[in-house]
Image (cartoon, rainbow, N blue to C red; front, side, top):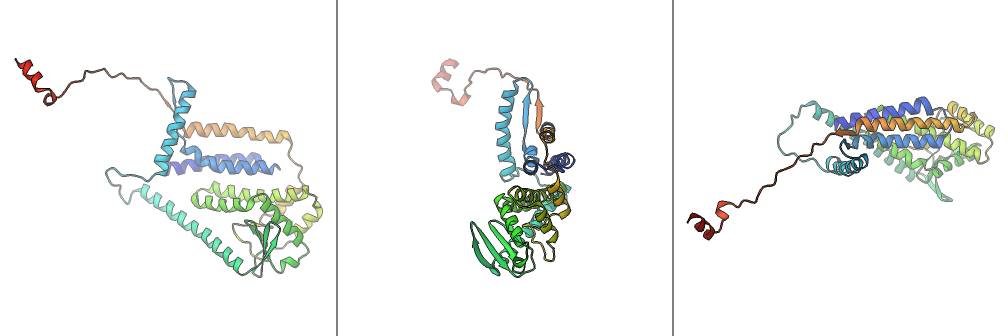
Length: 322
């Protein structure tokens, strides 16, 4: 398990470095969001792959063979329970210590998720529920700023009386429309499983920013006045506490959001930066997943079937003796 975890850190680090230095400041938010999600997934898939290329056979045959055997290896090695044939590892070995620390970390960070869900249920119980189209509105009196989760929007009662509430409402509805709510929760689960990986946390932070950039841009494209929207962003205060793991109107620094709103949209030539993704992907697959083997064909000489002495017929044995 330890080599697998180390490989995931290296893969995610290279993907994040590619995003941070080449794509982070560009305005193709949908592509950047897709890139980060795929990068998180591939950072786990690539270390699990095992591709053996036989130097004496064609590449196509080798890849097909490797795909079948790699799939079998994944299910038997990574999904099925471990079977100990013999021997017993020392309980104080570094490998066992690291493994125990890893699972303790998962347990600790999973508590955050359960606490979030419990607080969310408490908030629902203490709120008045309203039906708003395909969504639900929960009005409460607790010191939380407006946020969305699932197909529901949670708003403080006093916040509903603010002049910028209409903008907040449309903003949270756009989060729901773009599928950010479920994605935010899955990011929390992913960070729980790979809590030791700093690049996973960094990608999560970048994805949360992209969610806000996407919503801001989409609202402007649908007709909201850019100057008025920016003014509402500036007027929006953070007197209340943000609800973790949920989409929040002020979840990202206003300076960055306004900067992205006023920035020219990326051109086609700027999108060609994604061409660097393929070499990085191939490099990771080549380093971590590909093995070159030089098979030696061996032949086993044919032998005649020899019956055991006590299996010979008695009359045949007598005849031979005579």
